[in-house]
Figure: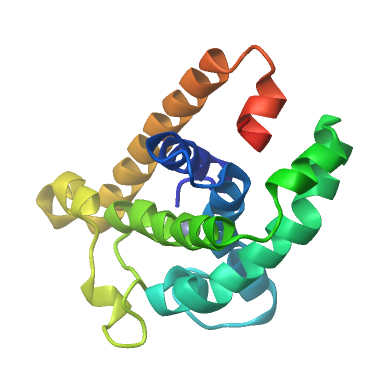
Length: 187
Ligand SMILES: [Zn+2]
């Protein structure tokens, strides 16, 4: 997977594409699917490579959106003020429960799965309807020289992280005035 924070540029990009979307909701939504990775790794032996229901569309549209909405409304303002010294009341105002916030959380989850898709040799996107191993990412296939899927995965992984990292740097440079306010709250 792209390292979880490297999903950020997609959230940021969506918030710029449609100003009615909510940046905190998009950010939290785009991070939430990966919370299952350590949980599955530590406690359960299900899914593939510690991906399971939160990496499926079924999960993203239900439990993923629900967790993200709760986290954005209840936790985000606290964390934003604690970690980045932002005005809690202002962040709370941006994070209040609205249809746009729920939609942003949902889109964050869905785009997380879509970004994971091309670079994995499997995908739970259509779980439980389609075998995850039958969905091989297009980037993996492109770089699977001599059919070496492992190598394809490695190169696709590095490339995706690199591209997202570059986007991240560009966003930081573009937002350098008032950095935290712009990248955490979006207004
Ligand atoms: Zn993921």
